[in-house]
Length: 585
Image (cartoon, rainbow, N blue to C red; front, side, top):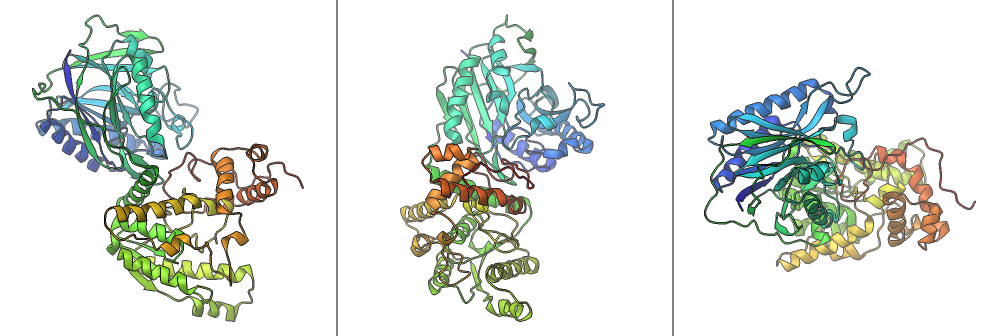
């Protein structure tokens, strides 16, 4: 049985950076070659970054992608890597985008991969299954492929597939079995959500058994707007046994020697079920090294560690890829701003994080102390800007009372943060959590102001869990916990009026989050929530708050997605909408 040395390059591309992404391919292909690899695979849409969204409709961008692919093939050969087969995702098109009546239904933009060898594009494959759920709109952008590419590498038949092809039964993997391949390579842009790594391994194992072949699954890593990709690349044997697995949330080159059945000289081609098979022999390729290598299986981490790493990476890449030097946030001493500050320091370092305490006459002494304590623990740039004189100036010229005065304080704070952003070039981080965003518990153009929100998809109860985990993790490493215990344990309050608590306006957060998980994440109705044991009166209150806050959510900053249904990309509801869940009036 031949042994094929695989290299899976779990790397971090940037959307639109064709030259930078090509440079990553060249760098990591060199590392793969130096490790004796006979085949190296990069993620989905590696050359263009993923997702490219409406850039698909720009013919200039499609042409640039194709040109960059051809240039990359030549550059790899010039680097002395011409014999190494390199699988790389890119954007292609064999017709106009489907945005007019003249478009051909079976031609258009393609989510494609290419195998580069000998200084040229030796083979192509077009993604067959196009997801159209959650954050995916691929039926809007792409035309599905109808053939399976099988390349013979070092005496082994390898089928090439893209992302969603592995998430659905049938199609490429069923055809791969009929084509009698020994290995299926699947390149991915699979976004992170909590527990997705627990889903991937059984999925890949099922597809391996369906194909009757080993599967090499390579996924990208890094942040792209609201999405974060966690890597988690792996190699699975034909019987579903896990052979090697990369860590999450970091770039990694997985090198693994895989024993694969020799290619069947009588293997069929042409039409096999719902797809046809196109075959190609790749020769020459590097010789198999004599010393065997196993890629190893990276240790899994806890859910809290997984989410924290996702939030850190999502913020870091948003700042880095968009050219910001630093971030600024309001540091109130409460749990949300404390957790955001800790995430920012972990992502960027304390010298690139500015925390601003903006006390009013209602700010408690302990909150001011907690903000200062966190700043001391983390080493961030800490400033104090009292807002009461500015609030008083407004009130001297306008007759305001009640909620208007409360919101005025939040908006003055927003003005201060945006002024510092304009003056010093910081990205403003907003600190509202998913629970508050769901029910509209925020001030528009006040505490909601900002360019990015690390907690946008994090429920309030999870914020507390993450805070305790981060402090415990610091203690485990012998470091000082970044978040003061009092910031975690005290009752949450916006401190916009005397004695104010969040529970004055909202149910207890544990009850609120349970209802929101059903209504927002699970699309459950009122009757379903009652059947789960929730109080009908509380349900009615929460659902009203969620429904009328859609206009606020549309204006909220982007933030890292960690759940199955994040606001924005996942959950799309009309603002003008009179449908309400039936309730007792």
